[in-house]
Length: 299
Image 1 (tube, one colour):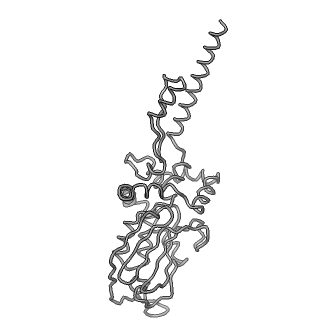
Image 2 (cartoon, rainbow, N blue to C red):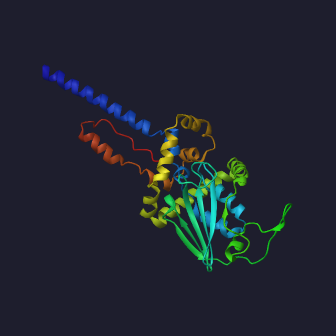
Image 3 (spheres, rainbow, N blue to C red):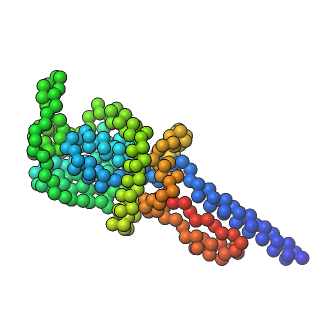
């Protein structure tokens, strides 16, 4: 009789444990806003570099290039550009301003470099984008273009071909005076239907990169640099920021991604779905044959 009560007690504890496990799985299948944000491509620093290449080839105007890069990028912070002269051309570096202070600092992270010299352009991803490298012939236009300035008459705007030919410049970094206009431009873009199309294009890019680079792509997007890791940790540990995600959720790329019914190569790479078969087998081995655990939700 005593043995039977112990057996019944074991079954009750086992049932409660299984219910608790299922409850935990249910919660994991509905990640919080913080989890959705922290594992989103933009937060991780991923950018559609095929679209960046197209933007560079399309227009020699650096300001327009900067605006387009910030349309492509899904993160919270602005992407700024800096350049320097190298032998036979120039080197441009695009950096995410992670601490939003309007200047380069050790807290910021490079997203890509663009080397343009001696008839070739090479686009090299940095950080989470380090799997990417593309090189192609570059033949810059040679026409002279001027813009009138009220204070100094005619002057050269920052055009890529001026940099290439080494004329009219002494290096470049995104002017602090452009921050407000860049922010306004991006805000307007993100409230338009064009942004949804851009997110879809970015997802297509990720699928192509997963197919082309395989483990190189997947290993790269799973790895955060110390700077990126510190940024995400600092943000997600701030109660005010976590609360702000609730009001910023509508229209945000990370939220759109999380609720999208389309498959995402980035989502699968960052957090591969668990095997339902292995979880069920494990549950049966523990004596919970009457229960099945749901698979994890990859963001």
